[in-house]
Length: 339
Figure 1 (cartoon, rainbow, N blue to C red):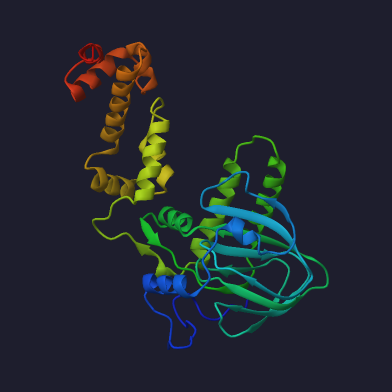
Figure 2 (spheres, rainbow, N blue to C red):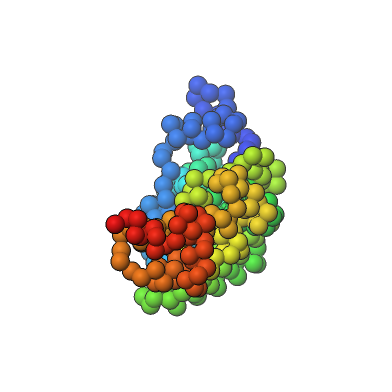
């Protein structure tokens, strides 16, 4: 197995007027944003890839992940690919390909890719140029784009602790039977989905399996950072969680449901939730239900029993007791007070 030199945390290239790129992650990323082409999303990136997409996950619109199988010409004199906001994992599926490549204006390096070998390109640091690339026949490539956030979620589940950063290294010529099997299984699944309105759960499960394997086998353990003490839910997790709760107010909601939605273990979820909202998840959901019930009592003429069912209670008596404990009045008294 042959690896590309220089990981993302070391051996940054020299630039005119600078001895080295900044060492701090946030400073380095800011420097890159000012001195390198802007990062792009997976669909914009696809526009820079020669060949035709044969199957992709675009119709599924899986948050944090995009997968595409595409052809590429068997001979290319030179091509430049922009950096992406997602980590890239690329599987080569054709005859041996030879050429030269370089990341982020580093020195050119020769390479040879063989059938069913992967290379890994970390997010934000994966501007790449290829030249003199040639194969005996047109190639076929599978490309996974996984967001840093998705890998952080996978690491949180795999390690059973809240993770806020996962660092990967540039790697070439990886042979990994599990990743390859997942890629082909996902291709078959995506081909079957076609235009039909079919559940995407299996495709999501395959992508999660892929992410777990990456965390286990290829993440830099020194770059997997846990959340410090006193941490709270991020704004994106808060928004996702609150939207999920509001969509399911009429259904039973368990701690497991909430943990899965934001990809946290029960221990870390409950700790972060209490630090963020100042109350337990159960009390928060209950208060959210009462807030929605108050809105329906104010803005509609629906019967109290109907509102109770809509906001997650199985009966009128339990709803009335809980409503009164929060507002000081029964639902009927609340509505009469508005007249």
